[in-house]
Each structure stands twice: as structure tokens, then as C-alpha cells.
Amino acid sequence: MPGDGSDDRAGMERYSDNSEIQFGTWDEHPDVSGEICQGDRRLRILNDKLDQLDLPYGINEEIIEGLLAQLESLAESHPPTYWLMTARLTEISLICAGHYADNGEFTAAGDLLVNPRKIVIHPLAGPPMVKHRHGRLSDQLPWIKDGRCWKGIRPRSLNAALHVEKPPLLPLLSDRMSQSGWLKTAYLETVQERMKAVADTIGFLGAWSLHGMEAFYLRMRHAPTDVRDFVQRHLCRFDRGRFDRIGREIRQWHGESKDGSEFICHRADGHLPTSAGHDEPSCRGRRQPH
Image (spheres, helix red, strand yellow):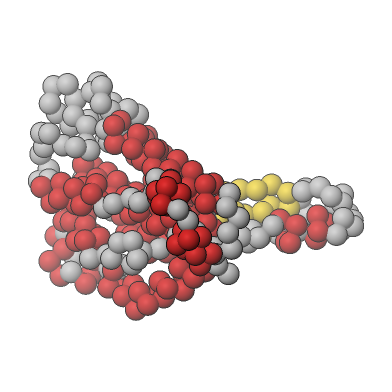
């Protein structure tokens, strides 16, 4: 259905054959397998994989999840590079969400921005169940759907607890970076601003009540120039500038403090943050204990 993300997801199927190449395993790289491998080198391999992605067309939520799983498997092996990589995955997610929003794929954009990836329903009576991501609770809980008493449960009531097991990617990554104490406040603020821009674009285009992007393009084609310009100013149009700059910075790290980083904090004494926190005004948050 146009506008629900299905067209874009179908278009991504052509990349499924490359998923193992993009994700793979560390054993595919003999020079970094086993005990010889250092976390920093694995992060650099992952960084190289990101360089191979075709943005924005060659990415979707599933691909980003796979890359995040590889990053998480490294724990915080080399903090500066680890958190730069987290920022780079955030950039991919923003580019993807902005592209979806600009093209009327509101459900797909919402999946990255607000819709949890997994919610588990724990009924008062009966086993837990996973909520259908794009469905209504009433479609899964019969005592809500038809209003009749079901197995002794009071009708027209939820009578269940909801637990978010997998939050949407953008809030997840943003929260992690904010809590880490490694990323500069100025950068974190740009992440929040662009997340808001995605939401604003969804609301703006959604107000037109268009049924799919075909209708949007037809309306834009016949609209006056000033209207077209007005609409363009309300689209995300995210570029890959920060994504590329973070990738270059990752390649420049060698474990020591790097002066003049655009993204990584330094304390007032010029050293990197520590688990005890830091006093650099451009940073916020604290690293969480392991």
C-alpha cells in the first residue's frame, strides 16, 4: 500500500543478497580473528562496511539492526571509536528516516522514529504474545475486539501489561549517545533537531491527505512555483556530510587523544573522558558503568 513503507521495503529486497557481505562474521577476516583481534580493528572493519552502503537507497531498518548487532558485540572495546561508530549508525538512521518521510513512506519513517520494534503483551490470563507492529491491540485481544467476556476477563478493558523490548532505533541510539558522555552536546543537539525535522515532515505532508507519492508528485508538478518552493523547504533533504566526516575521523583514531575532534569530547585538560565523568562544557551526560 502506498505510503505505508511497503514499496520502499520491496525495493530493498534487491540488497538482500548482499546482506551476508555487509554483515558477515569476524572469522571472514583472518587478520582480525581469534585472540589476535583488537576491538579497534574490528570497529575499523565495520566502518569500512558502512562506506560500502548506498545511501539512502541501499539501507533499511533491517540492515541498520544488523550493523548495530555487530557493534554491540564489540562492547565498548575502544571507547572513542565505539561511540563514533554509534554516531555513524545514527546518521544512517536519520538519512533513512528522512528519505522515507520526504517520499511519503510515513510508516517506515515512523518505525525508525517512534514505533517500537518489539512490544510484548502480558495478559492477566494467558501466555505473553508479541504485538503486531502495525496492528491494533483490538485485533489481537479478543476481549477488546468484540467487547464480550473472554476467559473471565472484564470486557472493554486492556487487562494486560505492555513491555517494550526493542525501542525504535533513533531514540535508542540518541539516548545511548547522550548517556555515554563521549559525544559533544553540539552534535547531540543536531540529532534531536533532525529527529524533529522527520516528525515535522511527516505531519506536513500528512496534512495534505495524499494517497501515496504518485498523488504528491502530480500535485507538485501542477503547483505554482511558490508552492513547490514552500513544500521543498519543509522536507528533510538530509545529506551524508556528517556520516562521511565521522567515518574519516574513525580512520584517524589510533587510541590516543585526538585534538580538534568535531564529535568526541575532551576534558578541559585536553584528555579524553573517563568513567568518572568530565568537566568539558561541550559535553553532557556521563558514561554508564559496565
